[in-house]
Length: 132
Image 1: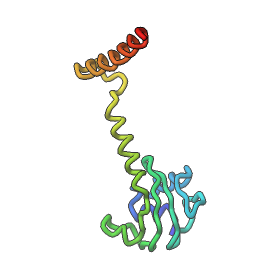
Image 2 (image 1 turned 90 degrees about the horizontal axis):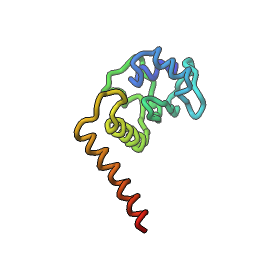
Image 3 (image 1 turned 30 degrees about the vertical axis):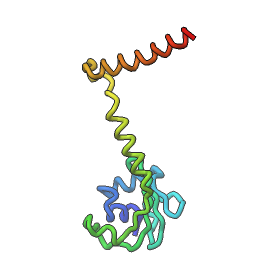
Image 4 (image 1 turned 180 degrees about the vertical axis):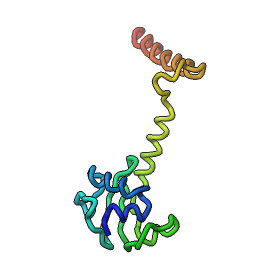
């Protein structure tokens, strides 16, 4: 089975064309080699794919006949993605929530107080250095 079809069948990509694009961009490797969309997949192959800033590592257990339901995906692949990859994604998500987007209007009272506290910390450090 082709790699793009396999990744679509085991629900890593919503459509085959998206899986094909990922192959063409070099986001998918099989046994350490970049894979073209037409590359065949066999049981025991190790697939690495980069999606949503996570490097997924999969071991092919079996080849499905067609797209499978979400509950049956584990029959056809073994996910060996390290837990650190998901922790890194969580940290990225939290850091994006912390900062306000540019152009979202005036700072709120809480934002202003945080800015004032931040700037006061630096001012107090400067005064301590001058007195020494």
